[in-house]
Picture 1: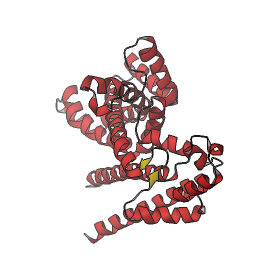
Picture 2: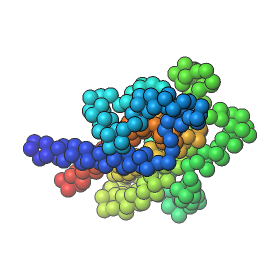
Picture 3: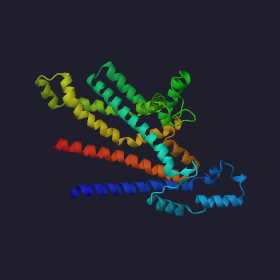
Picture 4: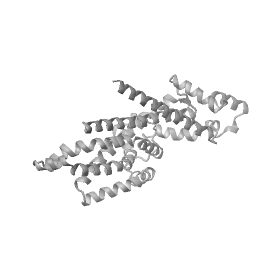
Length: 324
């Protein structure tokens, strides 16, 4: 019990240090940015406002303080649960996140699950058909997908399925004037297909290649040879030996790659104008919306840390089971 508490404490300490380093890095980049946040707030019309009005706005936005003072003020407010005011969206940061985070979580969850299931099944087929045409095609496709940038694949899908064939919407999460939840289920699925498909195809390559190698290792193991000697057919070997020993490592790999999935979702949301937290982060960075960018970075770091922590936990359980 004491050992578990120590591990939990160390994990919490690592998380705190990582979050602080990330926040300091983002704040330093914002402080060194040549962008003028007041000009962005005024829509590029800073010279259309009098000097007195500019002074008042700078005081209201906290831009008259030094970078260190603004950071201390933000940390003090965040420790009390207030993440600041978004000058870009003209509302509290917590409200912006509450509106956009569920869409990002939905997008990443569907892509995570799709790349895991599809990648695992393709890797399993490639291993079971080792040396065949299926194996060669699946491996080459995985290598090709791993080298394709997500934004290029997304633009290809937009050109083909949205612009060329008119099967799917070009962008966004809903038609103009509607929110994602207000449209029927068919409309929600139509707006999700292209970004989810883009993320799924790009991030399933490691799962395919890893699963193929793991399945081959299992098939060459002594316990599989022993099972075959006792008359187990291929279906029984796959269901009782191959899948249990290859699926969990694929899940661990998928959890460990959550950072790459989040980075890909930022690109996908920007490309498809999907109103999630990733697109808000990009817009906030361009507009130097400090409060929104800091809060979004904090949440994204928490999501990545959670995925890595889950991967480590499952990997430790897996190793403990093998040693036992």
